[in-house]
Amino acid sequence: MRPRNTENRDLPPGMVRRKRPRKNGKVWIGYYYRDSAGKEIPLGTDLSKARLKWAELEAKEKPADLTTMKGIFDRYVRDVIPKKGERTQKDNMAELKQLRPTFDEAPIDSITPFNIAGYRDARSAKVRANREIALLSHVFNMAREWGLTERENPCQGIRKNKEAPRDYYANAVVWDAVYGMAELELKEAMDLAYLTGQRPADVIVMRIDDVEGDYLLVTQGKTQQKLRILMGTKEAENSLGKLIREITERNACHPSKYLLINKHGKRMTKGMLRLRWDKAREKAREKAIEQSDPILAAKIGGFQFRDIRPKAASEILDIGDASLLLGHSKQEITKRVYRRIGATAKPSK
Image 1 (tube, helix red, strand yellow):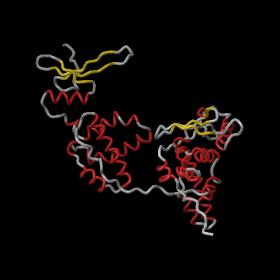
Image 2 (tube, helix red, strand yellow):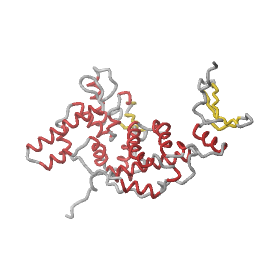
Image 3 (cartoon, rainbow, N blue to C red):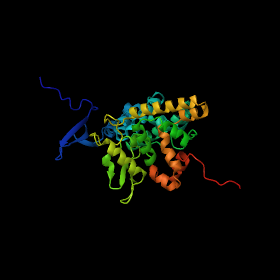
Image 4 (cartoon, helix red, strand yellow):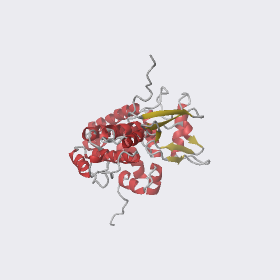
């Protein structure tokens, strides 16, 4: 018995797949519609668009998995999310988990701004709802690019829930309390985060080979923004240059190229940083309680490692310099979200 051709079993009747090897080793794949006369009509290289053209040629309704949000979400997960940063991928998957129960079975052309507003109002987590609607808006835009809908994006113009930016500021007393209880590698992590103004995820991946001349080179994981942070001049090193030199000297006996490592030479991970941070903060909080200072204890308890970045932004006098260090394209973001102390004023007399 002749073996059955399984090459096109996943395609609709009348659609065929053609493959052609390229000189660079890659394989070109195209889709064609074979009419009743045996003539093949090209449908393109995108399977989803090819199936839509097939439906038009067959005068049939569009395949359900290309018109309902479930199929569109699935393609977004397959084609778009993997190209994003690690943290963004994780956030997007959590956001889709919330969106799917409401929208999975809905045809894309049936969703209206009223539906989006209803979803926003029904969500108890108001800030997360804003992020979920922002993701849904991008999914709609991608669906338009893929040719899966010609409707306007129903998320456009939808009012967002009000958000209050985090307003915690770690003053010198709080900083010194936690810093005094920290292990050496945590102290170095705190100093590195403060002097560079970078996010925790970017701080723990800094390496000695990121140093180029008088600069520490940084590529921010969230935005891919590139920075060169000055470590001093040939005449004198600044605080960052001194810190990196001291870290490098301490790490000289270990093969790891990461700046933040423990005494055994293992690089600092998110879990290690969190464990050491929680331990130092709790010791500092308990000490404040022992000294009968519950207000300070509460302030220490609210201190998070991510608050070091806005602390740095708040203590740089020039907002332009602060915005540049944080990698913001607009000073307004630095001012509204990261500057957490008021303007300097003189007394009346």
